Length: 371
Length: 35
Length: 63
Image 1 (spheres, rainbow over the protein chains, first blue to last red):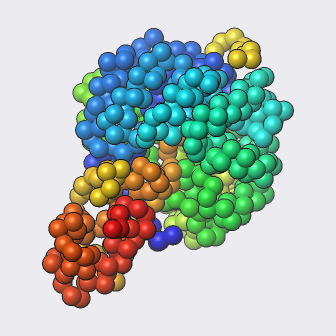
Image 2 (tube, rainbow over the protein chains, first blue to last red):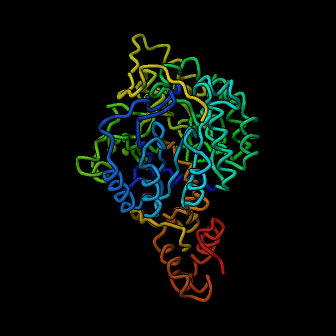
């Protein structure tokens, strides 16, 4: 592992095109996970059409963006899902898509296995149905496992199992490792952020300081476990974790949402972090000219973290975590390993928590049957 | 280069020092802000 | 910057000269010859290290 400081410095100032980006294909979803970062559930009628989506992919290819992460909502719900991912890979744009697995049956598993430049990430929130279904709904864990079985039977190769670290799932790390090993899959752990519906469950579900410390040490011993660099706030504990330990939002990554809105990252779907819309003048125009992105690419200041010796390791943490807990962006991260975030939260007398905007959550309960 | 590899030219910076490593790498998963 | 879709490594080549060496490798008999053609003697070993690192990441194929 080489010292990444010059890569990190270079990326902090932004690039002429993102290295990769997240594209949420639809706000429609057949589940209703309690922590959904995009508050998904109901399709937005202004969703990009198939031809708009393909034009976007052509632009992504022209900008030489290496990779797109497709999510949602549940991306496989879109009737043009295969058409779009085949269009992407035919242009040599790598595709990873994130799915709950409910639409991966034997036939679609075979179709996916025949494609190149394709990565799949299956989401669960616990190592067993009891834990995972509490967040994702009855039957969701079983669906996800069936999807994994289908991918294995179709010889897809290595897929990823993605888990958000909550107070409960963080106690099952060894089980997740064993599960991934049993499928020859990669394990990917993600930080829970108070984004989207996550704001409603944040207080009860975010890991404790002790759990975060234990996670940090567990990860240090397992550089093969993926994290999407989402735990860089924990790097203040000692040796840096794998990854650049850097917030890439608006600098090297961003989000394009189902209606073409461009946000700094998928965890800040809110007007405050809206950079523009691709329907105005295309995506490149937003990436290069957005005043929001230009300000993110300016050198940051430590703010309240200025007197802490660890700022260089953690960079003050995650914008989304601060914003959606009512902190200001130059406050410490609410999960600051030294407790400075908790102090900051305690001193906020009038805490105004921003609501997710937009909110595509379903208004009535969801139940899924066995497929 | 291997056909599986895609290239992009980034803006030039100042020339690296003679003792510095000329190559740096990271996993695509090592960028925060993607799923 | 180069991206290898197989192993998902993103590789940053920090000098234009290195990019040139890599692009012209196939025209020379050996890596050393390619480096000698484009780079001064005092930087030679730095470029050898760089090419070795690229080979290890499978961005370059040996043979």
